[in-house]
Image 1 (cartoon, protein in one colour):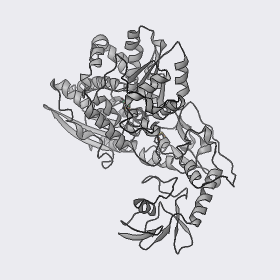
Image 2 (cartoon, rainbow, N blue to C red):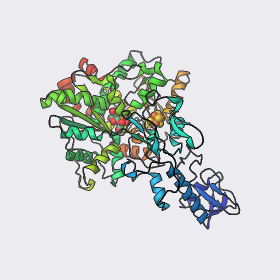
Image 3 (cartoon, rainbow, N blue to C red):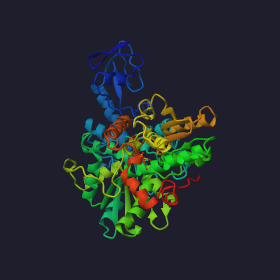
Image 4 (cartoon, rainbow, N blue to C red):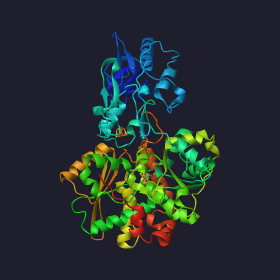
Length: 575
Ligand code: HC0
Ligand code: SF4
């Protein structure tokens, strides 16, 4: 152990503990801007400086270790003066128009400047304004960038894509897309991890809320919305709702109050995806097609973009089943339009997703149905949903828990866990077992693929199951850096699987790039646990027991993998 004094308090910590962590263990908060544990420990912002007695200089607390006998002051007059000057320097190169910034109220720079009582900025520097394509789902505003390097490091170390880099030197140093490419030319997966790890408003997702308001206003349009599984685990965080209060039913009520005509839960179409994907897996598995390579899940569009740019030769092993988002859009514009007896053109489909890549997915030509436009007209993120709730002056405390509309109302617990890493695999195995044996397994029989432990195992959970004489080897991975490592092992022949689930964001959709931002906190695991609890409490825990899905097959698709199902619910992924 190492013994030292921080702010007059005797402290004892393990060796190799940073001063910042040592202080935190004793409830002493040291402000920081650029620091991200294990990812960005470069002391670029110098906001975390502390005074070390006996030395005539300040040191950064995020990357200096606590040493025996140190006497540290985290808030001495000298520290305060330097910290304030550092933040003023950062602000001198920052566009400080907070009222028009989407991160206002949730910005680490704004908070630190307020805490330090910075009421003026004595220095003035030129503010960088690089051009950007505002139609791209990922938006960068260089005038807000504080060069903390978090985006560079997250994209490089966690997602292995290295989209961002530093350019220029000295005071002209700035962050931009690496290799002088435009963002469209780069291999960005649209995972949005750089957005959720940005401490300010330099990175964000394209705002599509106006499109939804316009559709609601348009009397010719019937606005039909769906809400993804992972949204329920996070939307309440920025509206002050406790976990138990923030139900999906209240999101549906909020959407209705905003003027949306019909509201649905994506867990319905997650069940539909399982019916198609589990059937496809059994078909490909029993025909021997998967001898060479496993079948990969295809519902995560960040993963699809990654596969296409980094492992194009594996694209043919992706499941042909569309994602629940796209399947629901197709069903809304066909089956549901017929139920309403309206033409598909009248239906305007909106999805609420925890994800930025879903915006890209909805725009892919692949999902364009000639008779009905795109499956999905607009995607908004969880952050945009909460913005719309605020814009509509809806008091979250007054929302009621309402059910989704008919006839696409049921959703199983298997559909709910789609939002957490391992969930799609577990849901698929529950139904694959039933399809092979004609009886249900224990609903928790496949729980070893769940997320606990995913961090320790480099984001990978492996499991082998025996269903009668059939041995199914599975792997679940989340995070694109982890995915790259796993795919390379598969390529080298070190591991063999039959079925692999990939989610681009660490922890799955619950940790998605469109979720509420809590600077420096990783909430994916907690949110995932919430979804597993909801599954436990669900009346239906198997996708094949969803009665509304069964009815839709009877009335419309006939059976999984039918001709009609192929036309509307499947797609061919091409590089
Ligand atoms: Fe997901 Fe999905 S589970 S990708 O993470 O499959 O975004 O929540 O909506 O489509 O259902 C995201 C979440 C979805 C889809 C579902 C899948
Ligand atoms: Fe990198 Fe993901 Fe950000 Fe794209 S969205 S730049 S892949 S972290």
